[in-house]
Image 1 (cartoon, helix red, strand yellow):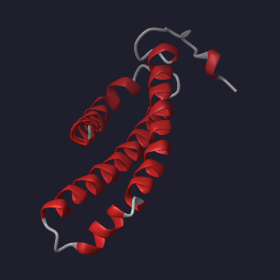
Image 2 (cartoon, helix red, strand yellow):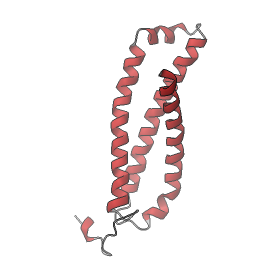
Image 3 (cartoon, rainbow, N blue to C red):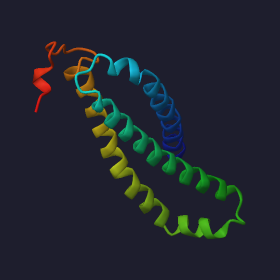
Image 4 (tube, rainbow, N blue to C red):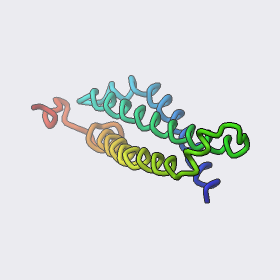
Length: 130
């Protein structure tokens, strides 16, 4: 189970970096059709923060894996054996998972309410006026 979780975490982290990068490439084109282009900035910022969080999780997990093969790194190994490392990873993972939900929500808002995919606002974008 731990190997599967590690594989999913590392794969997800790598693909998150790819998604963040390609989203940045598409930002200018998408902003051209949006009534509120600041929405893409918020979506991109949170996507970046989520990617950083999961990168930290993956690096800590991979460091733990390496220490199991290199017992000389005893300080990190003793931390993981005391279950402190597991608790820290869970403590980081919970807000990271919540942040993924928020990034998904922002992406859905862009797609369905801002004309990035489905909804077409009025030409004057009056539904976004304060």
